[in-house]
Length: 492
Image (cartoon, rainbow, N blue to C red; front, side):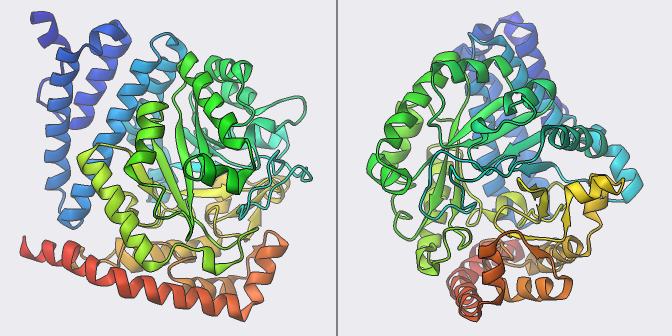
C-alpha cells in the first residue's frame, strides 16, 4: 500500500500538477500497475475532485458553462487514459499520447510565453490543414467537394514549413488534418505519415473515411505513434452507405478492427443533417461504436451548406439542435462519453474559435488558401504568397478580415460580463449569425476559395435563407441560454 500512496498524486497543488505527476508515473512504472482497478480508481477520484474545484471557482463564466466544461473535460481525460491502456502493446503510441498531453495542455503556458509577451495575447492553439483534395469517395454534401478527379495539394516543402513555424512561433503541438482523404496525400515522394514522423512532438487528429486503413496502413500509423484517426460515419451501416457509397461501412469496420489490433486510438466523426440528426447520438449507436468497436471519442459537425451541400433544407433545424444539445449533455453527464457537437456544445470552447483566436485555430486548404475555419470558405490570404514575400504564419494573423471576426467574438461574449454573454448555444458567425458575417465579408472582400462559395456570396436567396435560419435557432435557444445559464449566474 505504501507504493500505491507514493505514486498516486496527493490532493495538493493544482489539477495540472496532479495530472502531470500521474503521467510521469505512467512513464516510470508499468502500464499494468497504473491501469489496475484499485490504483486507477484512487487516481481518478482525486483528479476529478481537484478539477471540479478549480473549474467551479472560476467566476469568469456562468456556472452552468463551467459545469459542462468539467463534465466533458473529465470524459476527455478518461478517453486519454483508456487510450494509454489500450496501447499497452505499443509503447511508442503510449509515449506519444503522454507527450501530447504535456505539449498541448500541461506545458502550453511555457511554450506560448514568447508569443504572448511579444503580442500581448495567446497564439492559436492549432491549425487545421487540408493538404490534398483528392479522395477515393464522393460523398453527398461533402463540404470540400472532393473526389478522385481532384489533384490540388499543398506541396511537401510548404507543409513541412507550416509545421515548423506553428511549433516555433506559436508553441502549437496539435494539428488537425482533413481533406480529401489524408491517407492518399503524396507530394515530393512524401506522405502524411512522413510529416507525422518528422514532427513527432506534434499530435495529429486525422479525419479519414477509413477505407484505406488495412492491416498494413494500421501498422504504419502505429509506427508513427502520434496520429489518431477520426473515422467518418453517418450513423450505422444503412445511413453511412447511403451517403458514402455501398460497402463503405464494412470497410470502416475492418479499419477499426485493424486499429484496435495495433493499439492506435481512434474516434468517429459525424456530419449531422436534417435527416440523421435524431439518430447520431442514440444510445444504440453510441453502444455500437464506443462499446462494441472501441471508439474513444466522437466529433459532430452540423452540415454547413457549402461545397456539395448548398441545400439549406438539409441543415439541422432549430428544434433538432436543442435535442442534440440535450443528448450530448446526457451522454457526457450520465455515461461519461466524449461526444462533442461543435455548434450545440459551444460552451466547451468559449464560443467560436475560428480566425486565429487565442487558443483557437485557422484553416489552410490544399491550394494554400487561409480561411477562418473549415466551414467559412473565404480567404484574405494564401500561405504560398506569404512565403514568397518572405513572411510567416504570424503575418496571417494580422489580416483585417480575421481581426474583424476576433473582434466579433469579443463583442458577442468574451469581453462581456458573465451575466451578459451572448448565446454560446449558437456560437457560429457563418451559420448562426450570417447577417453579421456577411457585413465582414463585404467590408474586407476575402476571396471565395471555390466556385460554390463564390456563387453563395452573391446569392440573395442563400443569404436570406441563412439569415432566417439564424433567427429561428435564436428564437428557440435564447430562452434556454437566458434561463439555464445567465439567470443561474445572477442567483449565485
